Length: 83
Image 1: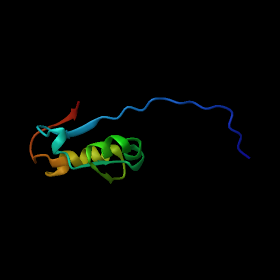
Image 2 (image 1 turned 135 degrees about the vertical axis):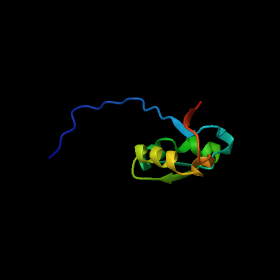
Image 3 (image 1 turned 30 degrees about the horizontal axis):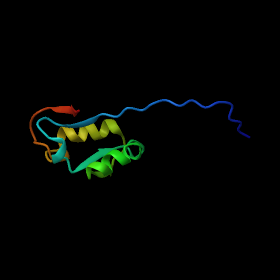
């Protein structure tokens, strides 16, 4: 048997990482862990951004750094967090 004795809620804040120079309106899809995508579902849907699940959020950032067309970005250059 399992008895639940308490509950703790906390705010989760996500960051939207893109390639350098990419505007929010140019983003076509977002890659992240399925749980993170689910937590951001309303936001992404409101912007018309397709969700693409990957193994984990760190892996998604690594893919973004190495994939030329990820989130509409350029092959060279850094990445940044969109406001």
